[in-house]
Image 1 (cartoon, rainbow over the protein chains, first blue to last red):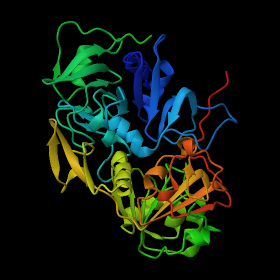
Image 2: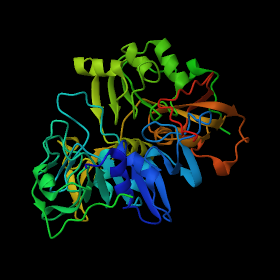
Image 3: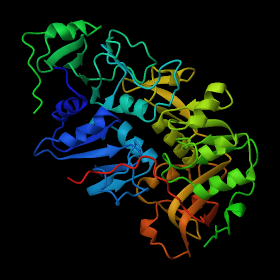
Image 4: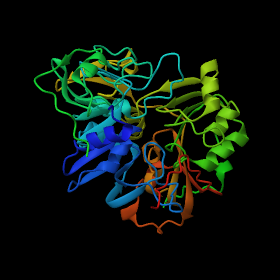
Length: 219
Length: 233
């Protein structure tokens, strides 16, 4: 069975390590905060100027002066701090944030990522995505392996305008966990019940497959 | 004490003319200079180039200036959630320059700090880098970006004093401190304007030297763009 969005987020949450500062993008990455493994302390950074972001407020506690990069109302956790936008991106470019998790429309085997623009459609802008992907040492992409038409988004070469070049390290999709190596995509894990053949047929890029590919452990 | 206080928004916005370039603080609708935007609508100033991370929503924030076609060009990082913006952009009425958010912030900071240009890795290898100088530092490619040049910066703070010192609240800080002092004239509107000496110098985020005019805003709606709450189980 292919994973749903929450299961993708659960699998990515297993990549969190103790004392990591983490930036979560909009969409599936935001859900990762719901599945932090037991015994692991992390702090979430949001590029609009907060470290130590907490969950959404209870109704009635919303504060217009306290939002995340998706413009949603949030709360703070003990140890939180606020800072301005230049400082926030200084912290990102300076590689003080340990892990960046973001969504993508396409990823290529050389680590290129496209996630901000579809020619001919309304362009909303890249927000902080270009700064994040160009700066972070450790980037995990949460995305769908194939689009609604069944076409692969895991490619030899991106077709959409790029957000960054040679930057993605790991990709988690509804079908698989893949690592990007100097030789290209390496298949690490498959979704429960999904065959290697199915993943290969759903992937335009070549996959490096070594030995038995284990099933992901979600729970 | 050098007194930066002006009596009202009309006095604060003196000298803003058609065709000027204006920086406006805020992220989404959080920390935007609401009173100054309302006054710009009233003044009917047109052909403005606005440097602001976002473009508001249809009926609030910079969306109010878009509705009246007062903006010629927007320089932003993200401009979703605005139907009128989309219409003007697709019809070619509105010029739009989209730049990475960190680059936008740093171009403000550079203008504030007297740095004419800088190198950033953001956008290398993408269309953002087209036509720009690129250079390798420590084995990594970077793109040269320039400081902004603007006529006015309009920022919003939580508390201020008559000396122009500013304190921000929560994530309403965002671009506001980066824009203070980044234009020829900086206007600060604050929720609460206090006499000099009322704020603890240890707690001031932006010193008054970067602010030319300060006034207390008449009212703040502080609209929330994405009200999101936790379920109580």
